[in-house]
Image (cartoon, rainbow, N blue to C red; front, side):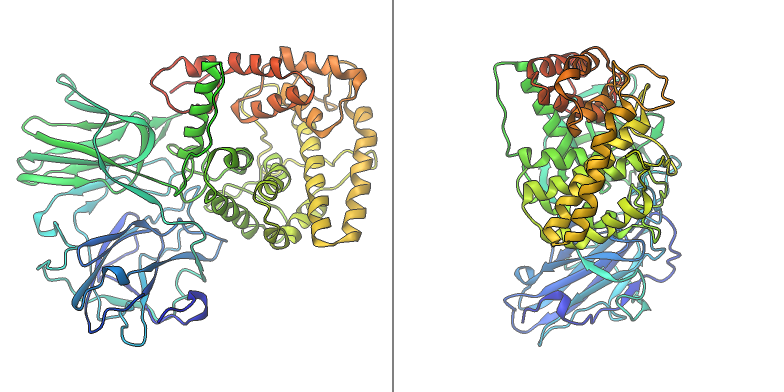
Length: 611
């Protein structure tokens, strides 16, 4: 029997092991033994946890790192759905689950406070949904490290104290006794909120792979292992060792901009042993500290990430531009997983300014499945909208300060680009009310067509100096209104279309009067150097007429304040002015330092800092 998951009731109950205190970095083992008389054609299992899980059925690994970081909105959670029938056997069967409860909210996860498992799988003949007939225990090998990640990251560092009694806990014939589980809630949607079906694919997982190169520094006793490119990986080792030797595992991006990133630590038992650090890391190198007396038999890694491929290609006669494209594509991919991310090392946060830039380029680079990640990002942003109408990011998580410029980027360039490339107008009806409320209840126009200044909780628009924030916000608001006019037309809201059209005309009629100085666009009160990024947006908005073309071009040719975050718009502006040659020349100059580092396969957050 196969049913649409949202149409059927939940049989499972929330369970956890005895002694669980819901503290950060809690790992639990769950097992259920059952008999199958007749193997079903399908058996859909629905699995929900606060953070992450790994699922085995009869010795087969079915899901590697299941679940999504919590937070379609501030109250609710996601669940996965998997057909486990292909892994079942007639007669005795065993389902095993390892769960990891973060217990930290951070900038990309909204902790529920509950380290529990909900497993739901049944048909007319089989019901193996989670209840007090399951077995569960705390996994004692997982312990707290002295070093912890910075507060932005929801994951903990993983310390594993090896004990052979727990090797193979997931195997069908595992013999160690495990106590019965405890039911902590009988209501499927009463513990971590309402449950929404995971909107993106399960992560793609590789087999264990060989490193590109492995070198050992005898003085520091560091085994340095080079990856083929910057990637999301789980490191593996096989060693022969006496007990109680400590092996630290970390990447070349262990500390970034002063923020501690994730790392692992393995404490050996006696003999030959294998270990895979299940918390993914990112970098170009994986480093293992090898104590005296430890003999390394093998080291490998498993790559994982969002289930899409780099299918776009680019090739021209300029090798520099070709390499920039390759590193850009790799940067784009490594910043996707549960959500889009601003960086996969220090924050792993869905900052919406970065998301907007991603949305505008992923269709040229990635396979079609990435549109589901974009749709998820949009629905989460609207799902976290405050009752006042204010939007903020990064979400999900515990960061609650609005960055006004990024939110205008989101509802304008971000949402519109998703429709433009995906041609999916369904999402517009889901977000329209939220967009309209944000643009018209939160923001206001002055009589002269400028917006009333808003700082939000963090009035940030770009890295670096000489940021004309008021001019940038006026341009982003205009672009957002243009997008909203399109949404309103798609919705058939004629009154809204008329209102928005009038506002757009008011802004356009007065823009030069409000912001043109005779040599550049700038807002009243801004006394910094010429802002290339803000003038670029004025071009993109269509505010640059022929008589000031050359002066604005001069601003864009001779001012270099934009960071990589906003450089994209300077390039687009130069192209719109008809000077692609100048845009390409600027591109070469701006990225010259980054591309001079041959070992890098991705791009950096700023032009002045190379990790």
